[in-house]
Image (cartoon, rainbow, N blue to C red; front, side, top):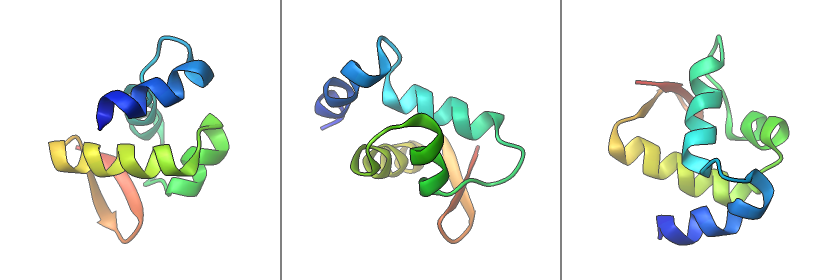
Length: 73
């Protein structure tokens, strides 16, 4: 599943994997971020961002202190 996610975003992102790009964006944000903010700032497809967020949450790399907002763990 994540392999396909990386392939779909590869043309938009160059060599930077979407998971890494999203995690980096979240880490650099001074406050918890919403999916819409990530989509707007990165130009990534919302479906890709949603899947990446779920994978990052499952891996414990991000958490959600408020509903629909995310911070790096």
